[in-house]
Length: 202
Image (cartoon, rainbow, N blue to C red; front, side, top):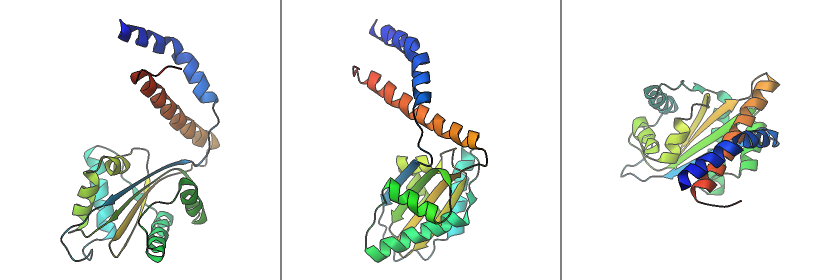
């Protein structure tokens, strides 16, 4: 009976929720997903890792799921390189805030709708072993298999590896706004359903 009541309430409120979510302001270029992984292997260095190979194995995992291949983007490569240099210079292993990350991307001239980052620190046998380590982590796997991403950039230095994903802006203002509005709608609906599932009241 309780489940039927919940379903009835969702169906009753759904049209109003759609209108409400679509009316909410959308902040452009705001969606950023950042994931990190710290892995240590009993090896000496990352001399066997290559940018090209990591991209190939990343795309092969997407191909297995019939997801479009990522295209290498030079601006994202430069962004990844700058991120690694900053971590080495300031001796840290972490992500920038969303605001700082956005600023760094814009400083490289990359206008995005969606941006994601995987970082790793450790010594890996080869390109495949690194990608498999990311795939074994749900959050990193989510970035790699995200259908919305179209481009990729990568940098390797010492024991640090950074992989950056991007969905660039299109020339169509309408398409850009529709894409961002859809993200906002999905997030708000997920939050709403989560509240219902947890029995939260409004």
